[in-house]
Length: 201
Ligand code: AP5
Ligand code: MG
View 1: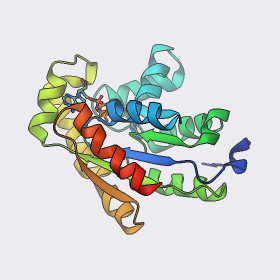
View 2 (view 1 turned 45 degrees about the vertical axis):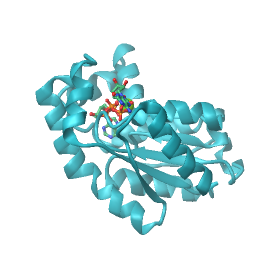
View 3 (view 1 turned 90 degrees about the horizontal axis):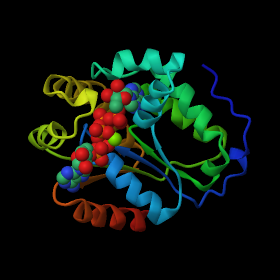
View 4 (view 1 turned 60 degrees about the vertical axis):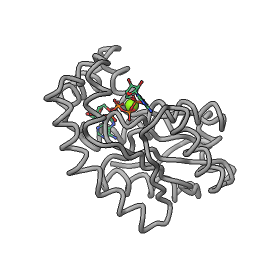
């Protein structure tokens, strides 16, 4: 698909931060991106939230995506890339942004690289939040989202291992990867992430 954007992205000030959060389901990507958003003042782009929003709005895209995410499977790359390209064209993304749950495949990462390169925007940092599988199950057991049923969480973890974990090597080779221990309280985890972000600025 074409990733061309007709937007003010090309005018981006390159010292503002673009950060990717990667990690298994329940690692705390959303929780931590929300905190960092308040700290840095840049928007938080959660592809999971965008897909659930499209489902709530009952759009064709939302209906298509729901068949995948309700089963714990990844939504096809072209669907996800479509919503990301559209969202990145919004003016608030000029100030940088926090990607939460995107990219999730090497193919999405390559598409993001092309998109950013086209607009002379660096990807500053990839924060990989690590937590043990047992804690994933514990955290999601009580939340009640439709994809939080134990069997679906197992499938989400399988998808993560198979399709998303290869991203870690991909970003390690670009020297932008930092791993963070995601266990402990949200405040403790945020303290670790803030140190990493400040060091990268
Ligand atoms: P998405 O919404 O991104 O879900 P996920 O990554 O599988 O998992 P979560 O959002 O549940 O985890 P999180 O790491 O954000 O943790 P959170 O902060 O919420 O994606 C959903 C689905 O959409 C995917 O399965 C896929 O189908 C599809 N999708 C999305 N993006 C896609 C893409 N790029 N490509 C293809 N498909 C895509 O925390 C979890 C819970 O733990 C919360 O209850 C929270 O309060 C709690 N918690 C957080 N931190 C702590 C802590 N330190 N201690 C104790 N509890 C904590
Ligand atoms: Mg999330």
